[in-house]
Length: 118
View 1 (cartoon, rainbow, N blue to C red):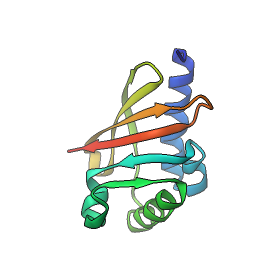
View 2: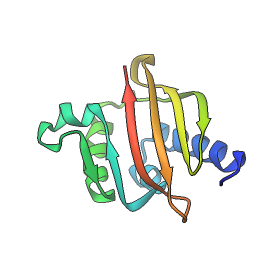
View 3: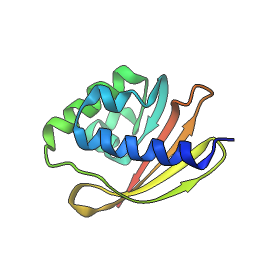
View 4: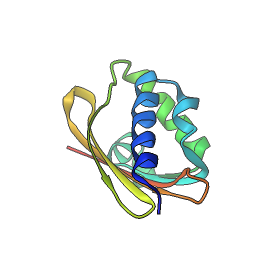
């Protein structure tokens, strides 16, 4: 099981990466073949069913999202630590509450992620 420092460091770096709008910095947290789901993704691309797989698909989706939302800024509210998993509870666009679940592989990279929002 990972220690508190791992989860806290990850959360700080993840929030900072998103706030930088640097797509490669954001993607550095994810395993190459990670799985992701989001209700926003299904609105953007209904055929996706709200799911995507892999860094290349995430780069395409998130790059478009970042370009469309230059004001995007995240503010951490709380962390919920699990066994090889973490939930970051944060304020997103417009101060709306969001939570994201992360599952980590043996290399410390995210292998599965699920975004939730208001």
